[in-house]
Image (cartoon, rainbow, N blue to C red; front, side):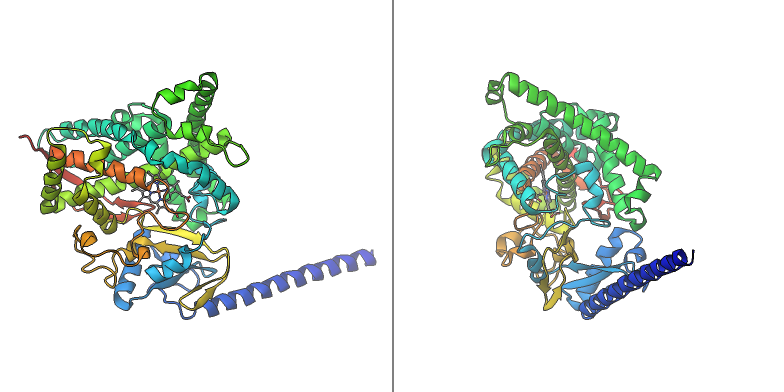
Length: 503
Ligand code: HEM
């Protein structure tokens, strides 16, 4: 009996000693992190226990405080704390952004990683996949889906989607009242992606939330942000016990099933009649189903499903944000709108839809699109996790450090842009951007946006078609506020008057 007691006591002592040792290691690591971060600029609100995150009421505060500090001090980067435990470095100058993005740094992973909350929905699709060989293989397999030969026929789809959008806008503003445009535009860009990715035409613009897929994608986008903004919901064992956590899984199952059904029936159709592909316009799904890697291996249905969901997530809200802020800017700056109108009239004449060749001539509209995406940063920030120790501004950050890349802040720095708060498309004509890292709406480097040209073409068609048909005016009774979520949203929507130009 005495022997058992001494054995238990020894085990207990051993256990406590291991715990103590681990605790000392954590303290040493913590002290090291404190040393590393000592001279890095901090934000004005910080709590020694709660860190910075809980000091923010909403993600917009983060952007506001960063911007204020950059304007005051010219800082190129900052450090923020998640609780008091671990730092997140925020880079917001071309020099510090370059230090991170010049090599292929991976996506953030694990609890609290910005992309982790998306994983149950998007799996290992290109946006969320950490990095490494699997990302390289999938990126290689997906790149042909964005070749110009594939994108060219999509112009017809953009025009058809614009036909429906314009008809809806025309009928909504018939009574001379202003209308909220964000929801209409978002349905239009989702319609475009469903057509171009899956050749699915489900009348989604008219059905809106009554279409189960539309409502599911909307729900997922909302739930993802809600979780991201609340570190208490990061651990899976907490989140999936909440009502919204359960709902999230349920809706994920539905969207996965929706895509899997289409993938399954297309694979079968292709096997039965491979020639049919050659006879019609190719969509993304055709490319993904027929892509082969260097070992002759194709993608599994599950891999394709993850990429399809990724296109839906990465491609529709982003493009819609760029378009609705673009329409708003045209309403707010009528002289710019008139120059766009003149250019379009000269190119299109009596035609009401645009061809591929027309898109190449929209010189002024291209400047406008660039300025829209600077002023209303479509994707306000992205995240990375260092694979190897990396030196930023003379400070070596350890491998594993989390980095936020603040595209919105760099877009408004007065040491990069002259009068950054002024809306002036001509700025992109006058001076070549000297440093490519100072303007990165589609990110830069190996993990840049694969859908850039797809998104630019869609913006060109929709904006040109709207300006050709309507005179856009802002509603002076409705205040518009930027809200930097995962994409730049408008906090209370955007209300505009649209007058038919023929009247
Ligand atoms: C105006 C519209 C768009 C903007 C501003 C935009 C912006 C971006 C940005 C900033 C990234 C980097 C994300 C990160 O590093 O976390 C990205 C990546 C990506 N985008 Fe876009 N995007 C747009 C439209 C699209 C469209 C239409 C598609 C697909 C149809 C798409 C598919 C992707 C994918 C798959 C990635 C991940 C690429 C990789 O990691 O290899 N995007 N996009």
